[in-house]
Image (tube, rainbow, N blue to C red; front, top):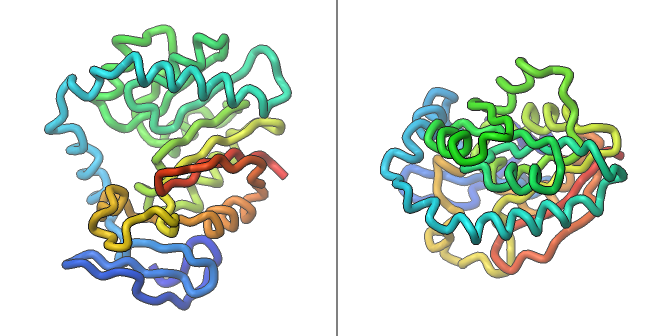
Length: 245
C-alpha cells in the first residue's frame, strides 16, 4: 500500500517489526497497518480455516453471550428515533447471538457472516432471523435497496484489507437517521502492553489494520459519519456510535 487509507498521506514509518510482519504508521493521522497487506486470496484462506480447530465448546457460554447481547440491543435503541419496525444488521454475526437479541427486542434482524460453521450454528439455533453467508460486499450486491436503522459491527474492521470500500457500503445501507455501533482494538490504548507481542489483538495477518481514536474518527468523517458516543473501554479497544452528519 503506497499511501494511508485514512488520509492519503504517502509518508509512513516503521511502527513495529517482528519476524516477517511489519507494521507501519502514517505520519499524518497515526493509522497503522500491516505492510505489505495480504492478498484477497490469502485473506479467504485465513477465514476459511478460522474455525478448523474450533469445537462446540466455543458456544458453551451461550447464556452469558445472550445476556450481554440483550443489554447492548436495548442500549442502542436510545440513539435512534424509531420505536417500531427497527431494522437491525450485525456485520460479522458469528453464532447469531446479537441478531437473536435484537429480534427478541422486536426488531427485524439480519446477520452477515463469512464463516460457514458460525452460519450453520446461527441458522440451527436462531431460525427466525435472516442470516447471509458471505461478506458485506456480496450482501450489498444481492440487496442494494436494503436500509438499516442499527448497524452493529464488532471486531471486524481490523481484519479488512480495503477499509474505504467497507465504510462506504455501511454508509449506503445506513438509514438517514440510523446509527452504527463499531468496536475495534485500540493500538494506542494506555493499557496496551508495551511489548506488542503480548497483546492478544496483535495477530498479523489475521489483523491487518490497527486504529486509535484519532484515525478512526478521521476515517468516518471522510464518509460524513460522525461519532456521537464514545464508550469507556478498560481493555485496549474502541467502542463508538456514529451517525450521518
